[in-house]
Image (spheres, rainbow, N blue to C red):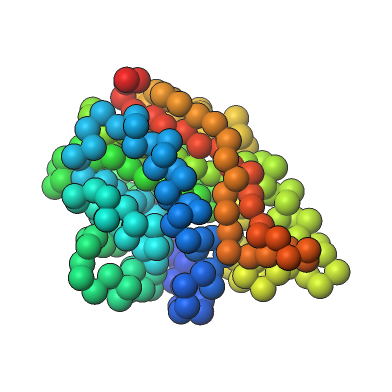
Length: 242
């Protein structure tokens, strides 16, 4: 199974149209407000920090470059060629490697695991952006890449986040400027049921070692001038708990 051409083209068109400057995309928050907070939860629970680290669904690589300054071998993987072009352009020294990857394609995932071996996997806000029929395949891919020694960190907007975004979109002035293209291209944050995520992990053979809640920072501001933060759920999972 692989993603549909419609879904792939939706992401390509989103990234082709998105402004180039840092922070212009709704979820492209500064790493200190995003991946750095996640690493404080993830890094102490790694069984082997020396494994390759895969940033699955890396987009334009903002968080990937931060990870590459802290781990010896980092790979940013994404479905979208336009996003990866931006990631490579922003990383001229090649601190990380980048690869186009369809995480719903089992053969592609198995080939990557055969190449790099077990890996630690970072996944930020990707599951809810998948089409419904691809969500288990994505979590299966995470499990394949992690293998026996790797650990995965998965963070997703909660159901409550969907309500926050619907309220923003329904405001008198319409959705905020950075949220509008997200909705126009068919992304639907908060559309994965909170109870579904542990089920996806268990079905993939992963055990949850830790979990919790955390605000997911965006680059957009509400009508009152405060930064929009979405409620999120995070999980650290692997083949066995430490």
